[in-house]
Image 1: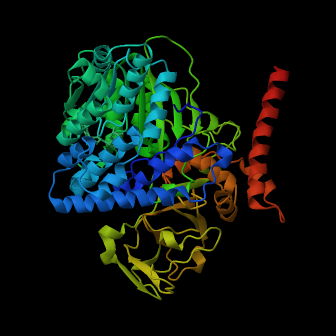
Image 2 (image 1 turned 90 degrees about the vertical axis):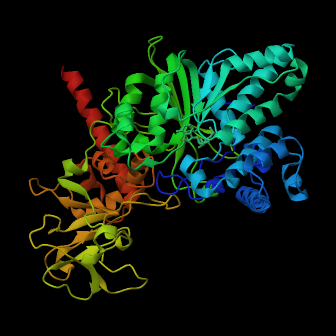
Length: 614
Ligand SMILES: C[S@@+](CC[C@H](N)C(=O)[O-])C[C@H]1O[C@@H](n2cnc3c(N)ncnc32)[C@H](O)[C@@H]1O
């Protein structure tokens, strides 16, 4: 059993773009497998395995891919293959040796993963048919239990049940406990039938789920002389009406990915979780979960972190806080190399639907680590009103709150942040490279021109190019930036040490003298002409490149892309303290921490003086 403070190994379902459905679903499977069980069981201090975990897991995945490729050539249907493996009618020695000796839950996980690999790639991507590994599923089940849900007594639904990654371990827990109490097979089957349910859109997976459950329950089935009738509905969860009886809990790993052209029906039905027409599948599943659990019921979903601070998730954040208490938000460790190729961050989100008992809930957070003890991060900072504001994750090195009085924002400093104007895909006909601009052109800055704390130069993208990129643009266009500025990269990758990477542009150094534009993968910060600037651009740039600011930004940014909105809301030290802290000989990281400290202590001093005089 894996306690809430325990360690675990898992893979998050892989994604391609920051949110989109994965290009390589089973990349993520590298985090699972037999090897992980061994790692997990090791005490934290012995977690240095002679073989790096990802290599063993990658090998396992590579092996499964080879098996899948061979089986595809054989012309067997995915379900047929999986049923043969479950029934020990193994097909060849390679497949046999892959599955032999695996603990049951891992065997089931790899069977479901093989099914996914045997599906046509496009369909697999469309459905996000990438499955939760046993250790993560166990962790999620533990959070339900900690929230008071009793498997076997309470009714639990997985609304995207895939290969039964949650239903099988839930059934295992129910049967284990019942067996210990001496219950008969028939009693155990009835407890499972009456308390577990799934919905799955892919018919083969729904059938496979039942087959995996029957495999798990074969002793009970033999004893009872019948197969259980477990409800795994083949349906589109998003089109289903609320159930007649609401559930006590919803658990799952719903599909993620943006729906680019949502139907009117979707827009209307899920309006409470849609902001600016941006629809992500996981928000819709979260909404269904909120609707389908009882007041006081518990929801545990594995979802991307993007909703925590993402500009398109204002409605979702608001909806969550209006309807539910956040019990936990546990980010899944992203620093480990085994997360290679997984481009976004995911978390285990646990909610209790409001309405039963009024009680104060302090939302907790742990960093879920692979092969090590999970790290308690403390309390999640959630705005106490349901206006859709960003949430702030706790940070292991960060003990204080994030949105504190005494701190300022870019706007307070007298600056405006805008997303880069030029969209290459749409407007490449207006772009050319050269050394001098024509009268109708201005230089263009790309994200790759931005190097931390270096003067930004508008070179074209080719390696070592010293040719400048120019964009044709109307003389009076408001998109032209006619001042000095700071440019930031708008997307980072999860392996970059810093999420914020900023550089200064000096207009006077640019050819043409008409200003410049930046590409859409950048954010540009310019002086607000209606205000005076409290810090210089250079100081602002150094501030944004500091570890202290980066760490705070990460707490409100759940994804690798840097949102302009998040940047606007980012709490920065008071300008006076920044000016005082940047002294010759003082490292920027240290100076910025000092500035934060001074900002907060000055405010504390002021409020105690006010209290004393009052
Ligand atoms: C990321 S997988 C997770 C599956 C499983 N719960 C797990 O954690 O391993 C998402 C599952 O949702 C299913 N799915 C996708 N869209 C669905 C929909 N609209 N209704 C029901 N199931 C859906 C997919 O077929 C896939 O099996």
